[in-house]
Length: 107
Length: 117
Image 1 (cartoon, rainbow over the protein chains, first blue to last red):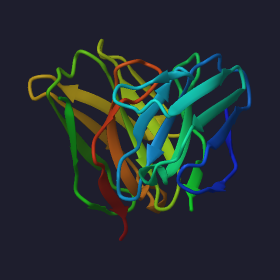
Image 2 (spheres, rainbow over the protein chains, first blue to last red):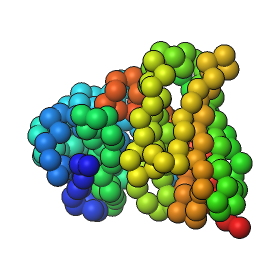
Image 3 (tube, helix red, strand yellow):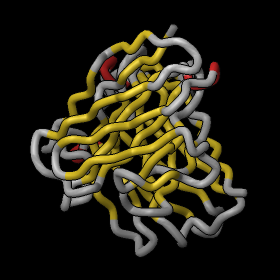
């Protein structure tokens, strides 16, 4: 199955900074990639699906790009509520789903 | 809007069967795909399996031999059964909707399951 690798493991930034998170797949997944935000004690929240489509209600400062094996989530200007863990997730042709290990964005 | 609410026993003994329910409100369970996903303490996310709107299922190969996902459309709820549990199955279990088959757009708040003697 496809393995997802996320980098960096931790991103230490300040409000107003630009955040760039990377997700790499062990084989091509076309654009079948999603991004989630998770805060402590909460369920993940879908941010981006199909690599670049923002989910309803997600602010425009979140954007996704990439195809094949390399993907990026960009937060253009960090708000205090954006400090969280971010996961990428892929689905295979056989509709098997896997998640990356996560990137923590903190101060 | 759609809401998902998981429930379960909280504590399960090793080798027993774990049974969880996800009540779906605000949506019809036979309109979309629905998944179970779990998160072990301090760890990442693991997809368990899904039930499609046509009643087909698909499971994580690593769990397939122990897992069954089903639905009761009259009650609009989703069920997960996992047999022969071990301490490695201790996790928060989430149910989630898949409005597009590629991603999980609505999640329940999760239910904690501990496997311990």
